[in-house]
Figure 1 (cartoon, one colour):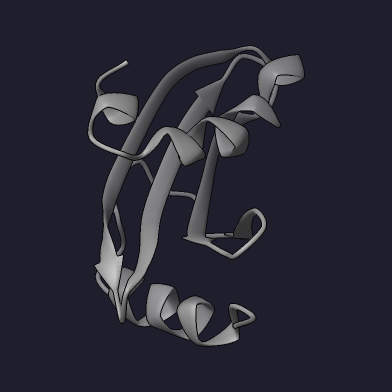
Figure 2 (tube, rainbow, N blue to C red):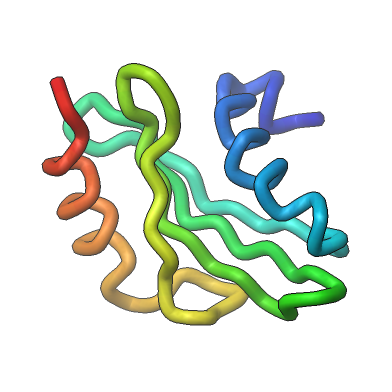
Length: 90
């Protein structure tokens, strides 16, 4: 998987949570904010349809929150990711 090669293998845990819902496609916009790896992830599943999440890599595991349903990042996704980063424990 290309994401793993680029250092974003930690996103596998986010998608793995949706395995029971039969993922059909996965899209992610990834980056770094204030030294923390972040992502907007959109997963289309057979059972749930589209699931979108904001994700930040915490010290132990990814921290996730459900985002508004969208296959592409909403205009304010950077603000949501920054708020999530600021909640990551040190």
